Length: 449
Image (cartoon, rainbow, N blue to C red; front, side, top):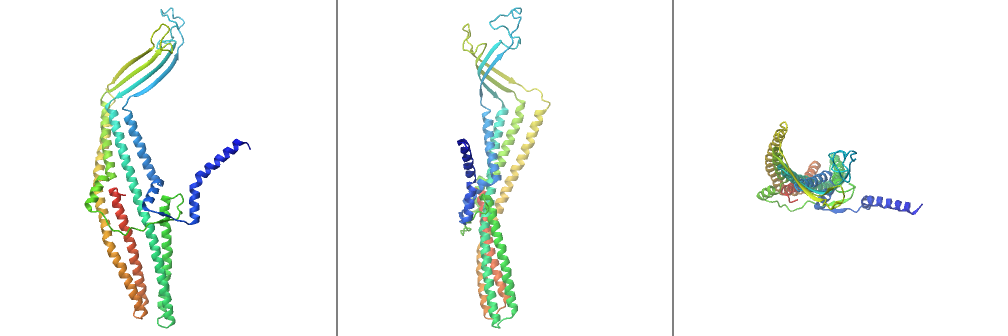
């Protein structure tokens, strides 16, 4: 094998290794079982880099920005350096035509000489209302694409927040089910001991065993739900969704902004309103662009260079070949079979639809703000009640177990107390995630997240 073949194979191997390196690192991390700590900001950042819908919105925003640049560049003069060599068959009967020349006369009368060289710099400029209106349309479309990208980002953030806290909530519920199973196992052991001491009937043991078996099934379902929640978030964040990671628990601080602050920030930072307003500006500019077809267009041209039989500054007789020319054209529209009128009507229809969309977006923003704030406020108010419910249910379970040990209550009462305590803990976990997601929704609406 020669040296070049070895170099090619080594290059291919290094290229494949570089492409597979991230997956190898993920696989090694998965095998070693070393979970990485993942904050909410880290999750949002990684989701923005991996989510295809948001990537499409970013691409559309960048493309619209380039379209705006191109539309503005079309307003400026264009410069072209034109070079051409033209050869035409000479006329055989040039002398009979009364024309003389060193090169003879070209057989095509439209051409200037048998040998013609053109080397000219040309500056062209077109001036019309349509060009300015098209630039305004492109600028408004770029602003709308930017707002749409922000809408996609906030939607992605809302999804990440929900999945992020769902992971911690699912893990907490699995832990609660494990504690409930341990409690059921202890109660089953107690009933068996009391049955052996002939203090209770066998029915209590059966009831305790049924409760323990139910808790085993609930724990299995809770573990499956926790795994599903981790995989759903992992799909957004990692090349391998099975990558182990840890998340932060919901913040125990229960602060939320005032209603006036939320309204003020949402009015300033709402991308839906910006998108609707940009669409309205684009529709207005579209009407002006369509009406511009009724007006004349002015074209200007400046040309400097040579157009001569010799490719030189001076001809054989000392004639200057370098020169310039200036031309101007004014195109006045006369008749186009009412096409311009139909385009104007079409653009006005689109403008009316944009007005309706703007007012509908404003109404929807007001309703969304009220609904989201009411949801967050209700979730915040219920957190204290849920804390009290957990404390009360725990005290009830403790007292019921003591009464059962003293023979003053039944196994059914103990089981009911256990289920009530577990239900209160689960409701507390759900209430906390409800408050966090509602608060995150407010932060998304106000642009703080």
